[in-house]
Length: 150
Image (cartoon, rainbow, N blue to C red; front, side):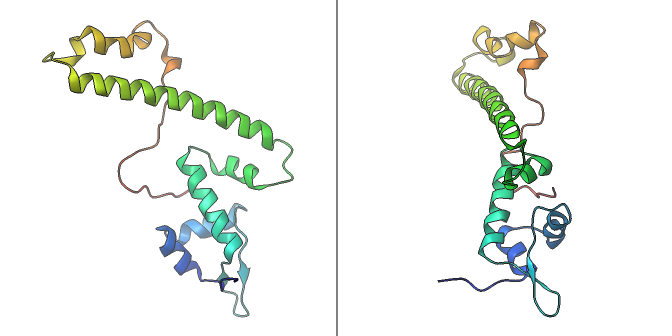
């Protein structure tokens, strides 16, 4: 059964977004909702899926430009963008795993100052050795609901 189209306000509320975010995504070509006779945006199932893909992709660290390419079946650079994103995800997951290991160690460590614990220091030794490329800048926040502006 096909669901009836919904307003921008209803969609914004469903996804916890401000309506201007949906308008911005429309302005940059990520969304193209149909309009009713009065010119009001009407979001159907396809637009709901696109909004969900945009949100999930942003949460994974993709830019709106990358998401636009992802959603464009005709984009010749689509696979290159996706391959680069997978590599970025792999780097970020490795950094998060290292951070998790350090946190678990800190929880179990008997040292009063974990920064002086040899086991804890292993987690940052690459940076001490001068390899700043091993850390991922700008990991997304994990606390609370983020306001996704695009």
